[in-house]
Length: 331
Image (tube, rainbow, N blue to C red):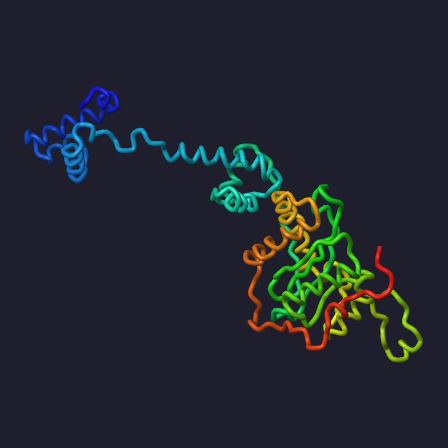
């Protein structure tokens, strides 16, 4: 064995080499070598073969000089924690682990990341569990009902003034749709609903609150009262022309699915907009085009029945005419 190899070999390995050489030279049998070194005959045979093929250096453990699994894990851990502090400091472990894989090509389990953060005394966002509520049962079919609402929020975290996310969620599947606008009003409601129709078709019903955009505050005329007709907002009128049933919720809790969607998006979507450095409503809408399908793929469920109740736009109906606002433009 060369001098360098002798230095690399431990005293135990040199002792084993001495006994294996005796076995190779037929001074002792492999069984005697096994008993002398307290190794199995199979282990002795492997060592004999390696030394015959590689010479005396074959006695040195093959993992010698390699990085241990522990060392490799520590390097990954240090890199992950550095990325977390730099890019994902207010992310929860679940979302952070998703983004580490998606954007940084590092796969780490969310619970492993959580333990690393705890052991490293690194603070992270810990989402409180929602109190259990008896939720209204989902509709059975896709397109049977869509919940709709607007959420004014600091979506772009000061990179742009507050804006409104006009959000939709299918009641049966949880599949979302939406778009950002400067404000919540008739024009954004009509534009977003027209975009929804062009993408998915006309739903049977829409469930929304009593915001003045969606429910008229006008008083019925005597003629209306005699005919049992309630005044309609312009948005209600447009939906009525398409045969869409409008259902007004009596409280935010009643339309809980869209409210929970906003709560989730005010965590996940805001962070996605930050990572993509969106600074305008147009840029935010481009991020939505990628974000919404990805979110749906991960979190949506199958409807109880597979048929789609969305309808195509009937012939003769011009959406650009039906979804227009008469009278002065909203401020």
